[in-house]
Length: 185
Length: 310
Image (cartoon, rainbow over all chains, first blue to last red; front, side):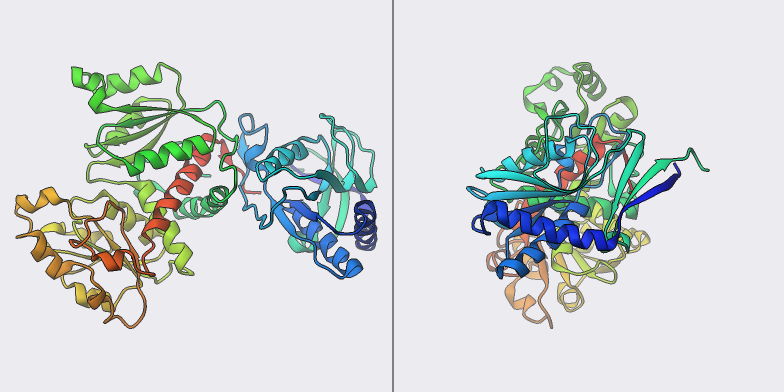
């Protein structure tokens, strides 16, 4: 399938400012970093989580425990997908019992990934509360899930796709709105 | 994933890319075993039959745990308590079990090729858990996972396999897997227990354990089956131990530490000295833990669709 970039929604500068704002909002809502832990959803959510954690450390002068979560094994489409996603390694080296967990992902769409992440987190313990932080909320939820911290709300049509890119994996920082232009064009 | 066949019959038939994917996927499952709740919902609704025609404790428990940790439903069949006693053929047994609408079969059988035979005749995914002296692919894979935890690369790594090569499915799976990954494999044991022309697979053969110890990074010590003592392959267990037993004294002559592995069950004081089996260079229990993770990875990879490379 070929895709065409329709619009650039977030520039590297925008992304830098969004990370700063999200970091401040998270610390403000939590009234500091007591009991705060951050868990990013692999792959891009995890890199965002580490960027936010780094910014929080700059603000508060103290590191926040940060981990990576792979939700592949908790997805509800394992049986129906033709292609099987590669599993990655979850890395949560701290207790989440009684903690305030910030779950971080790049694009919030149907909410199914977040649903899987909530199930996965429950297998690690019983957090005090879980908040959701996303870089982009593009709408079209299929489950009753909502983000607590949003980088940017972007209304989209269902045929479009929102692609987040991060230098750690994609050699650039941006969010693009793309659309399919048909097979092999 | 290119397990195009949908089966794991032997490492001879698995491409290097797929071995790499299995090793990588195993890491994800190994992490689950350290969680407070060691279970994921991935294979909910899948049914796996463990078809064991030969006694096995470790492999069967390992498969069962792997199935349960992935939330699959599993049922066990052992030949000692079944219709096989009443004269049913393997094919009839398998067809009957498949008629109960199952998804995967794990088979351990005394005849080489039993797993292939089922793969040809059933629609279910077949996993070979040992077929005679042919292959034991999940053991080969778990050995490789354990080696990969200790050594940076397989490329040029020198692995010695010591013992009863002729009757060992573990040896053959290790040979196929390790050679594909670029390791150098040397077999060692009494000449009566090393098949002629096995060097055609691309392995070296040594009949002197002290020479071998000077030239390896990993030693995989195979079990000497006590029954073989009376079959004339070697004079006595004691003599075997004197000539091929892995002892601390022998290992101390090596210029650097050697990773010690054993597929179990161990005969302490025969193929391996007790203090070596328990030494800091022994990874025998890591092998057992990795066995569950590897089997979870295999079940996961076979149950899913075509592999997504994105």
